[in-house]
Every structure is written in C-alpha cells, then in structure tokens.
Image (tube, rainbow, N blue to C red; front, side, top):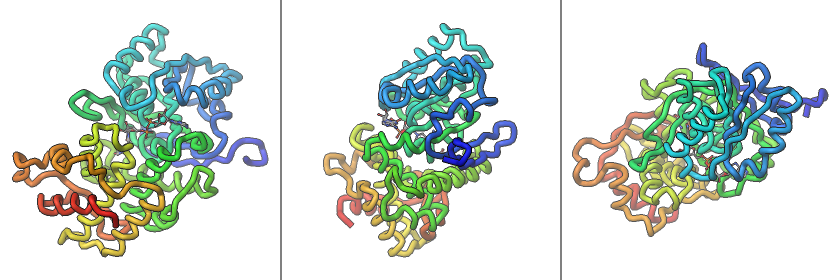
Length: 371
Ligand code: NAD
Ligand code: GLY
C-alpha cells in the first residue's frame, strides 16, 4: 500500500492505437475497483461471474462500486468450461436485453479464463459490441487470457470454435484473489508463466523455475513481465496473421491434443500445456533446425516438476487418441501436419516448424517416462 492509502499498481499498456488499454497489477485492487475503472466505464454495469468467484469476491466488489454510483447488475453462471457455450452466451445476451443495457453500458468479467472468454464474447456480440473490463481472478487469466482480446465459446465440435477479437477497455489483476485459488489451478497458471520465460525471457524462466506461490513478494513483477511479453507480441500481431502471436502457442500443439484426448476433464489447460512443453522441448533438441541443448530441455522439465506440474501422460489416455486429436492419424499424416513452436535455446522460441510423424511418436513415448 502506498503512503496515500491507495494500492501500489504496476501498469502495462497494451498499445493498440484506438483500442489501447492498461493492465493494472497489484494487491488489494478490488477494494479500489471503482476508482480504478472510473472514466473507463459508465453505468449501467453488468458483472458476469461464476458462482464460486461470486462467493469469494462478488459482494465486496459490488460494495466497492457503490460509493461512486456505479450501479451493477449481476449475471451468474456455473463454474467450469461447460459454461463457455452458445447456450450460456445466448442466455446472458437475453438477460442484457431484458435489463436494457445500452450501447454505452459496460460488462465486467470477474473470474477466470472461462468468464473472461465468455463475457468478452457476449460483449463483442451484444448490440454489435459494447465495452468490457477484465477482472481476472486466476493466475492463468492474469498472465494470459485477460490480455489480447481473444474471446469466444466452445461448440460440441471443439474448443473456441466461435468467437471474436474484442479488446477489453481495462484489465484489473488483483493478486490477492489468488490466495483463494486452489493450488492445482495456481500451478496450471504457472505453466503459462514458464511458457513466457521459455519463449522470450530466460531471466523470467530462472526466476520461477524453483516454484512460486500466491504470497510470493515477487509475484507482481512476474505477472507484469508475462503481461508485457504478451502485450508486445499482441501489438505486433493482434489478429495472429504474421506468425508472431503463434509463438504464444509453445506447448499448445500437443497440449491441446492431450486436453481433447482427455475429454477436457482429465487435465487442466495449464497441465496439458506442461506436457506439451516437455514434448516440444525435446522436439527442439531433436529437430535439425533448432538443436536445443539437452541441458535446456532438462531445465524446463525440472521447472515443471518444481511447480508441481505433470510430466507424464496418464496411461489411461491412449497415444492414438492424442494422435487423432492432433490430426495426425494415418489419414492425414502425409500432409506435413501441424506447425510447431520450438526453442533454439531457453528464452528464445520460434513458430512455424514442421515436425514429422516419427518425431511426434518419439515425443509421445517420452511422455510415458519419468525424466
Ligand atoms: P476457470 O475460469 O474455469 O477457473 C478455474 C476454476 O477456479 C473455476 O472453478 C473458478 O470458479 C475458480 N476460481 C476462479 N478464480 C478463483 C479464485 N480467485 N478463488 C477461488 N476459485 C477461483 O479456468 P482458467 O484456467 O482461469 O481459464 C481457462 C479458460 O481460459 C479456458 O476456457 C481456456 O480456453 C481459456 N483461455 C483463453 C485464452 C485467451 O487468450 N482468451 C488464453 C488461455 C486460456
Ligand atoms: N493464448 C494465446 C493468445 O492469446 O494468442
């Protein structure tokens, strides 16, 4: 807390011209939310949250709004990925119409990545687009999903198949909310932190390699670093057209396939990404264009272990199911397959590599073994 009684806030600007916004990072920010969002939102506000986050932070957040006359409606969904659906989005859109939120109104997404993606999509669609503010309450949402404007919902056919690029007007990341987050969810967010270090910043990687907790004095600096890395990438490739934004998908090619093969219930997103990063690190060692030093791949494995992330694929997930999800079953293997993000060294990733089916099989074998 600063001497004036206001919380200390780190600010990362996402400089997207007319769509520029700030990401505010600090402790105790929710109690000052009205002051922080003043000028960026007008009543009526509609807060979209899930019932778990509502229980922890809803009343205090709404209370903080009241003195500044920022009356808020509350729209609540069930916690979990299943709420990131067209059905839930349609219900929320109807509720906004019923309470007559106008084009000047603002949505507030209070929660994790599910709420941010869902509320962002609703904000992008309602009246052809209204403003929204991200108030992320998971580590994953703070360092990744609340920044960059990707919003969307899932279809039965697959994840994130419907959506829009719709940048928030502001992001308020109160690190104190992470103290109620289950440890498993916090660690899943750490997978994305490790990702940023691996692709862009060796010093960040070293800072988190031995494990981090929500109470860590350095957490604001760590989140700030991650957000700054993402902001610079999004500024250069907002709509993922040049390949630079694809760099953020390190570990995600195989990670997404593992998530899908596990029915989206076996692993949290960050856990599947941890497995995908382990595989991608060794692919980087074996790939002739990258030749990552083995010591770097081992350091990445150790960092995942020290952050309580999985390194071995659960035997109840079949290799065929992962290959199928990767689009690498026999039918399509000949087409050259997916594009991968690989590492030249820890702290330097590059997107756009092709990896042949033999190396993918080798990587999947590796995931059956403890390092
Ligand atoms: P989540 O939103 O489901 O939250 C995880 C769980 O933690 C939920 O049960 C939630 O109720 C609970 N929770 C949230 N904050 C809490 C708190 N402070 N205290 C206690 N419990 C809390 O999951 P997530 O990992 O934050 O987000 C995953 C989603 O993010 C996925 O749908 C993924 O596709 C998406 N995502 C989007 C982007 C993007 O760029 N838009 C990037 C990465 C991931
Ligand atoms: N999470 C990847 C991106 O925002 O592009």
